[in-house]
Length: 547
Image (tube, rainbow, N blue to C red; front, side, top):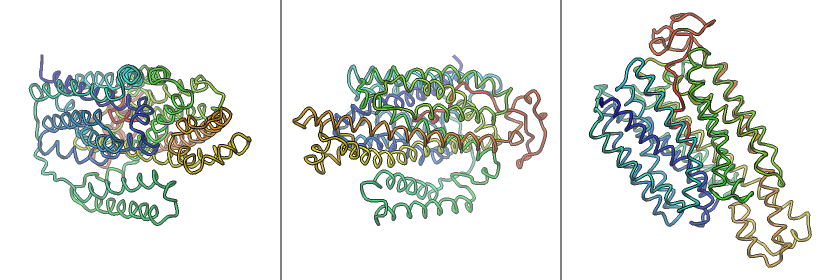
């Protein structure tokens, strides 16, 4: 077999492992919380620790791939991710798990930064489109079956095996990579941007940490205010440094082109809306409705399978329909789907989510491949690595800040709403009188069922669980409404910013019927612009589905 096809196999193996691990984690979170006796904040960090390190290391990992060879860096990423998966599975505390998840994020960043670049260097012309289509199918397939596989593994042999399963897959991918993949190096003379890396990483960490700890420490406390101010100062340092440096990790000049801003906005809003809500959807299905991980995974299938089915169709349509219309439609459907899921009540069954699942599935399926295609189409080929890296970084930042921001609202509202509901009944008032600080902590950390089990009277147990269920669904509805607004902002932004004249002719196909002719207009890099986006992809880039 030609080495280029071995390259595709190695990349698909690694990517499948990454995405399967990301999606299976969601349905395992309640079991992880119970097993490790962790708080709700710990659950947030299970996802955010991964997203933060992936976002922080992604662009730097791309530079390392150019400097030292993409094959070697991809193999390093595989090894690191596999070893981190081992320590995740062996974790005995929430802290150990979250540190291991952060290490997974570093390995994932290296793999994300080099995977598409390896395909691009191995394939050209129509074969590249075929390779990206296969790669996209693997991505979509992993996302589609992830919740189900996670449910089967967690319900069958335990949550630790969702991490252990990565090890044999990683070994196979490493062997193929070292034996069959070419190691291309580029004499770019690029260097690691340490100022940008450190300032961006610390700024993002301080922001997310402040959002997670804000309710516990007090939003007006010196501690939280200092974190927020420090985050803003460091982000300012990052922006100024990137603007002035000759070789920045993120070239801010790319954002002079409105389409780059639009793609970044679309990536951020997709992740910070529906993907950030996956955590709360999982908690609703398992904690409130009492479904097992497998039962919850099955109920996610309408969303994930529709996204998988629609994605290749949307990828093909990118050569006929302008990308901004596709992105706008996809994110608008995500907004509609989130709004449909914002009408949950304490007495609802899971079927109340089904219309929203279906609409969001179609929206995700439309948006992901167009974002993946457009991220490489709005810049010249030599800048496509940084452009896709920037889009993937915005996805991870969206996941991290979305979960943390929505989590801050969740913790605040669910505690106050639960207490209000308990005050409305005599049994609830008795629970409040005897619950003390333990009850307040349980309401904000997710340990309500443990507290309820310790209440001697059946009326008290029922009152607490009913109040919590009412508070959860009310808060859930508010979060879904916020997610809908975020997705709608992304839809409008993409529609306005992703201009057809910004697409680079060397990437694009012939102009869309009825669109501007190919070569109409000059870009700032001297490339003409086609009427439609680049080679269609069948699904999202890996980072697209990190939620």
